[in-house]
Image (cartoon, rainbow, N blue to C red; front, top):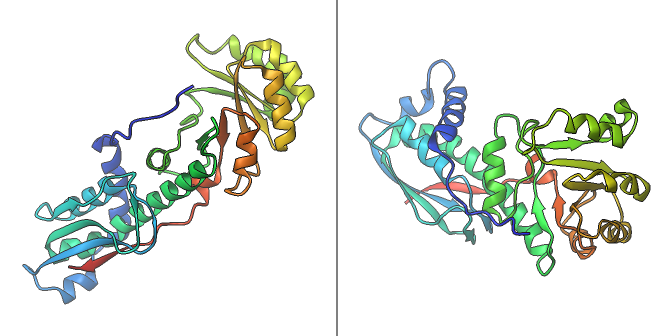
Length: 286
């Protein structure tokens, strides 16, 4: 199984509305009254986006679009690409043009870049932790509202892969579905009666007994939730390659190697997108 993805840029039509809404939120009802009072019209500057700490960059297009929306005369020149590892002091991009537009767009550009670079950096750390094993690090739907597409892109920038993007692109039969249906077999039967032939189906289990019940049902993947590495290894042996195995729960950089050593195909991690710390990036006068 190869989940490697090329880091193609997101279409601008998906990114621009998010950046625009973020700028509008910041501009409020009167615009940047501080910058407009302090900076004379026509004043120009050259500034650099600089990494303050080591990490992996993501979100360059967000910054580019933020500056362009504020003033089309601002030139944005990236010095690295998304997915690049940077050291403290690395110049990520240079921004040149009307100072008012640069300073007004600064916080929007940095908020998005710092957030996405933080997700990419956290992902890269977990990817490095499981190196040598077949397991792929994947994200979940535990994303910041409104930023899912960007955050999942950032996971790819960090070397990870994506789980489902929403409720409509794959089936995940969870414990509440099983309880309401009266059993995992009935839940999967109902799914098969509703979902087309192209829809992938995954079932969630907490125990090996539940896994044994799921195995004959012909699902595409199984989510092994909150199992110890030893139990995960037993589960992988039971599956015997008949479906993808995904481990979830209690995943950290410290625990990831043992989880990966169990032989699972995937390790899904919610905190990559809901709790990853930002990568500190600043805007400095060149």
